[in-house]
Image (cartoon, rainbow, N blue to C red; front, top):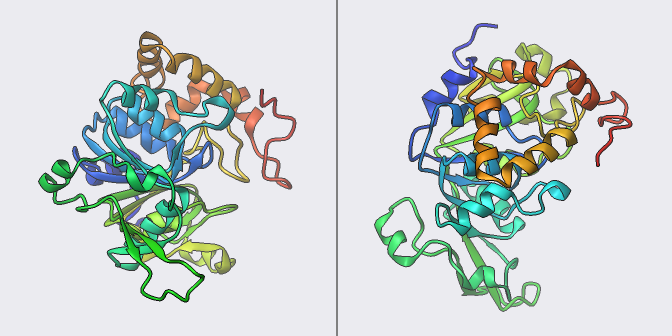
Length: 323
């Protein structure tokens, strides 16, 4: 399976994620966050990252808590019932260590889609009549100083085709083109073709909008294997720059048909995240205290992993105590 795209995670992160990079991570709340990559970014001490995310949870929260992020553009940051608003993310914003600009879920999807299509913007009606249109997270002065930021958060314009759907005005949302996007998938081949089981969220748009793409995968196969179910292939090989075989790479979030999210871990994390000292101890033990994701999984133990292993018929863990 030798291929120039196939590499270990530490190499991929070191090669493509630099201090000050504009990055995007896939997943949705507690589903398919590329957590192994998130931990490696923290472990390597990457700083001043400008992040784009659709509706992320654990990945955003740990990167914000570890001080890796300086700016974030996002629709929602939360872990569902475990943390309706991500805890370290919220604290970083309140203390002025993280600037945030918010968009609706649909707006973020279209922003990534515009980037994937090579367009400067896409029109949408989402956001009209809300503070999303009126309130900016990045000032006009900041935008003037930073050529990577669009001059405006968005623009409201007259509909050039007024008969269409009766819309008088449209919102133009700017494209996103990250330096690197990182996603986790169930299966990839050595050339980079990816399969995503279940809901793809906005991962495909995020993947195609980036200058570089790191894929971590549960299963790594040869290219001929992907031809057997080609209708499941979501991302073509030419979009991918690094493929990392990383079983349990989304843990402690879920990866459909592989494993569920870990409520024990997420509840314990919630307690640690609420206190600066406990969060520091958490990072020391689970991120800096291990050399890689394999050691992190050893720390979890086989019994914990077995408890969240997915049932092959339903794709979710059976009888998991989610409380």
